[in-house]
Image 1: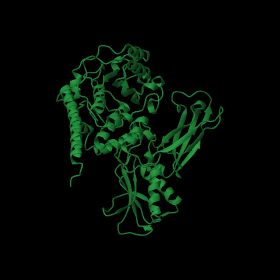
Image 2: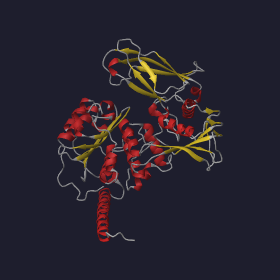
Image 3: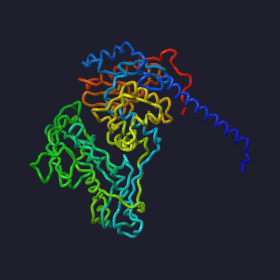
Image 4: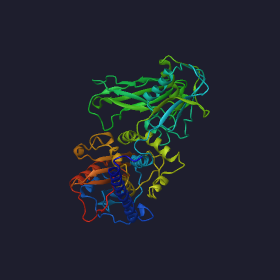
Length: 521
C-alpha cells in the first residue's frame, strides 16, 4: 500500500538516490584518478616516477645538522589534500623501519574492514542440559576481544553469580591462550607490558600495573603499589627519592628484578612462565626524581592462563561463590548455552586508545584478527582496496619489529587515501592524537597546540618517525611523513618540530595541482 504522500515521497526518494549516485560517482572518480596517477602496478611505481624535491626546507636541514643526522637517513613527504604531487618528497621511495607508524596501516584497515562501530563479545557458557546453582563446568569464549578489562571480566562473573550459579564443581575451560611467540624475542624485556603477546582471551593485556610515587624529601621511600594485587606476586621495595627535576625518561634510575619464589638461586627467567606462576617476587631498586610526580608502569610476570585463573578466583570468592576446579585450555560442545555476555567498546574508541598511547598489544590483537593469524597477509587486505605497496614488510601490525619496512611514499599515499577516498576519513583522523595536547605527541610540540595537527609518533632504537595530518600556511590540510633510520635518530625531535613549523608557516598550495572531483562522505 502506497503512502498518501506518494508524489512527495517519490520525489524525496529520487533526490536521495541522485545524491547517493553523485557521492558514488565522485568516490569512484577519485579511485579512477588514483589508478591513473599510480598505474596498474600500484602506488610505489607511480610515486617513484615523481621527482624528488631538490632540497629539504632549510629549517629542516639545519635541525638535522644540529642533531648530527645524515639527511640520507631521512625520508620526508608533505602532500596536500587533492593535490596530484607531493610538495616535498625526500628519499620517498626508500623502505624504512616505520616503528609505531605501522599502526596507521593496522588501524585504517580495521576501519575499512569492520567500520567504526565494530564490537567484540566475550561470553560465558554452561552445558545446555544443566540448571540450578551448581555448574559442572563453565567455558569462556571470545573472538580475540582486544578490550577485555578487569572491570568487564569481573562483571561477566557477577552476571553468572546473579543468575543463581554459586558453585563451579569442575573446571573453567578457555580457548587456547598461547600463540607460541616469546615476548622477550624483540629486545629481551619479556616482562614489559609493551611486549605482551596477544591471546584469544586476555584480561587487562595480561599486565599488572604498578603505581610509583616519589616522596617529598631526599632519601625518602618511593611508594610502589599495584592497582590489582595478585596473591602469587610479592613486592620488595628499595627505591628512594632523589630531589631535582625529572630526567628525559622518568624511570631512567629505576630498576626491577623478577625472582622466582621457589628457586631464588636459579637464573632468572626473562618472560612469564609456569615457574613464576608458583610465586614470584618483584624487587624494585634505584631511585626516582621527586620532580617526576606519580607514574604508572606495567609488568607482565604471570602466564596468561594463570593471570585469568588468579583474577577469576579472587572475583568469584569475593562474591561468595565456590570453585573446585581450575582454569584450563580445552574445547566444548557446540550446544552449550550462553549465560553471561560482555561487549567491548566500539572499534573507534579502541583505535583512539591504540594510537594516542601507541598500544602495541591492542595493535597486535587487531592485526591477528585482520589477518586471521597470518592466513590473509596485510598486503592482500590492501590489494582489495586497489593498493599495492611492494616494499611493505609487516611482522605483527604494531611496528614493534626490526624487520618491518614501509616507504614514506606508501605511508603518505595511505594517509591521503584514508582522507580522500575512505568513507571513514573523519573517524580515522580523530583517532590520531592532537599535537601538543595528548598522547605520545603531547610533549615537545606545545607551540603547535593551537594548530590542531593530528599526528602519530613512532620510536625504536635508531628509529624515529612522525606521520599524520596538518594544516599549511593557508589553513589547508596536508599529509606529513617524517622517518629517520640510523644513528642519532633519537635526537630527531628538533627536525620534526622544524618540519611542522615550516608546514604551518611557509608551505602553500602549488598552482594547478588540484583534482576537480573531491570525494564526499
